[in-house]
Image (cartoon, rainbow, N blue to C red; front, side):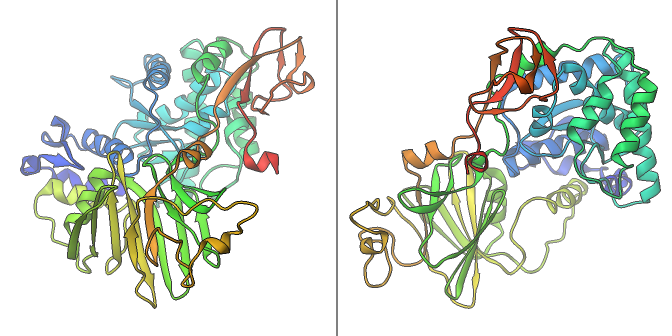
Length: 459
């Protein structure tokens, strides 16, 4: 996104012609040539209204923002960047004076000082105007050596910012150990980064605030949140979007692939790719479809059509900026036939493909549940269609209560240590231990656990 900024400096003149972006009125930053402020607001709007990717916990966000505010008082910034928490792995700073903290990043940390280390690293990028540079996400496409240097500088600056704010500088090394897992060419080697910050910290202590962090994390979602896409194989096989309350039934013989929140199914000569997006973004995609048809269904407004092949010309300066940002959002490719089902919170997009025309419908209820005495195939008619339910083809329906329960995410629970010692030797956690097993605690100290094991842990 940093490469966009020089272009849009000249484009923002006259941007008062555009008053909305993804269904919300644009802030003053987008009408007074505040490029960074406008980009930051758009990026946050994208997470909330297009990708359904903001983690909705106002108290946790306020707590993390407070840590950023404390660090910023010792920086060269006039004001702290705005921090948002996203349901994703990446933690990164963007050119719009925003720091996006991945919820799964927070999950890995043991103290407030470690959280401060992660935020201090990103704050250093904002302070140095490095643009889109990340602790472990993907930076912009420019010189690799310069990007590695920027990461090293941010690590070192973070140690100084931690100490200036009263936090323990030694927490920076632990934070890097916790969140850095894979090596990549755009960042210095993990071992080198850790060794450098530990040398700079020199073993100096300070505020750790482990208890304060854990209290804020109690009941936070842990691991992947399946509510935007989860395959269940209970009474019947289906892909469930619990956040929107819908499901797509899968049939015997379907070739199914599911990655994160995207489902791909091939059924004979027909295929469908399904994913959830925000309602404002869905409406914008739907409004531009060719051969457009709108149907009122029991589940919501259904819009079908073909994505135009030619891009429209963006005339107003802010329209050009908005189009460049929107190109990064989840959306079907030009020429794709789609069906978009709107729900109160968002929408499900189905990209219809294959050599055969894939029929699509909205159903009122799921197939009847299979039982031990009635195998699944006995519930189907000669055409393979569930009896008394959807017509042949791909169909969305309301998710059942059991499917919604099955898609519930795991959450963090705090359990008191039964005695003092290393966590890994205490036999604690009824679900899964999330704390470092080597960490020493006193009797009664809180220990971070999951409320239940993940399916992979149980298998």
